[in-house]
Image (cartoon, one colour):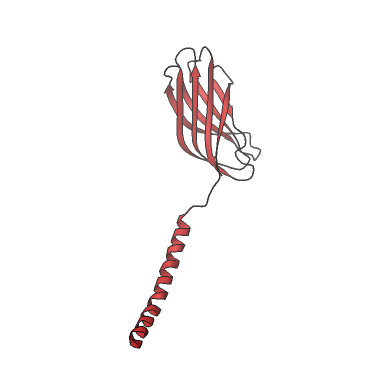
Length: 158
């Protein structure tokens, strides 16, 4: 009995370091594979006509403390008038560095209305600095008649 306990102890002593190193390696691999949690938020904005065929939708500053990444942008327009098409849907980001030149990102285009409603949206990867002002621009064709309204939405992490 004493001999088998001694053999068991020797066997355990050999496998404990191997098991410890394996578990430590697994913990390191899993901890580096899991991304850090990020804040995620969505914004919606009503749009106003800035010309007979163009609307602008202004979003608040995405984050005053962190850089952000816009992941999804969508718009929906409805009109009681003639059929129309969303010719272009773009996101415009105004850098906070005092630049007066916005950076425009084409999101979608050529979306015809069906039953007076047109939708456009896409997955995007738009990186913006903290305190960046963001807006959406929507070009319609032909100029809509009747009552027309559009909204735009974006989702971002920061």
